[in-house]
Image (tube, rainbow, N blue to C red; front, side, top):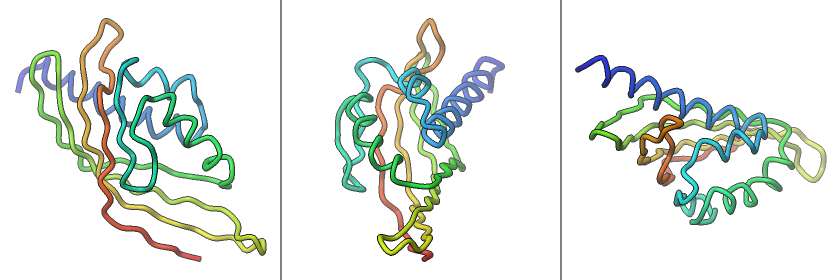
Length: 141
């Protein structure tokens, strides 16, 4: 592995972490900056859309707005580099807290895989495509 490979993998891992923080902090400017302008995101595994980052943001707004908190985590990232492009598969666990209609606190957890493709730009690595693959869910109410 070359120093450039190490640098590229660290930058891609940082990009994945910024995605998690942007969602949990509802930082939509940072969220949009993670993706190429023509990125395609497939979140149909959990009932979401397949479309642009802007369409995914519109999908997330009411969901994240109704939750008390979320904590997106990504791990076991496997990155394959190919010059100015790359692919990755990573595991994600997402606990979410909210309240039932009766006011009782509830926690719901999703386990999934992200299948991503990336492209190096003048501004660093960006996500070109992202697909969620459902693994499991649990209601911890």
